[in-house]
Image (cartoon, rainbow, N blue to C red; front, side, top):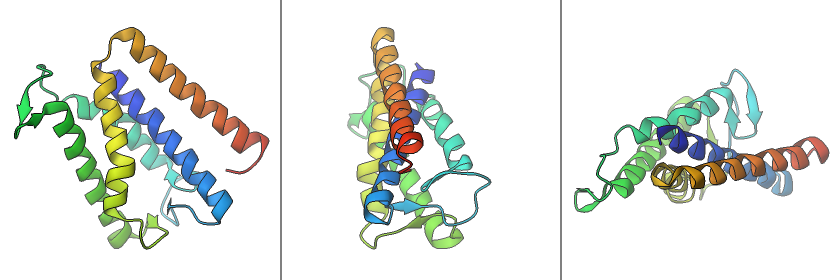
Length: 164
């Protein structure tokens, strides 16, 4: 279950990074970018360090889940609480990366911690928590389909068209 949470988050992460690279191609500016400070730039908004971090984020997140799926934390479902709290942590960490280190950039003035929290990190961790609790067959279909979609998008938009 933890591996499924990790793989699903990582697959969604790549889908968002491909989307960000396509936004860069069509508008001239990505929503987020890595202007400096990476050992290897994979796409406009993801370096090897960020990719490696997201490759284990879902697995780590799943390790704090209570075994009881219906348990409440502060009156809300524990899966929702874990997804929201991890999403908030990542959005706050990103503020530090943008404002203090310069290794990460939010390109548009309206793109900041709140939009990142809502449109990026909640889906990342929400999918990870959902996938964690699915039966094995559904996990395999979802993760397999997600990685197949990522591969096709990278092949078409990256290799064939050269857009990303």
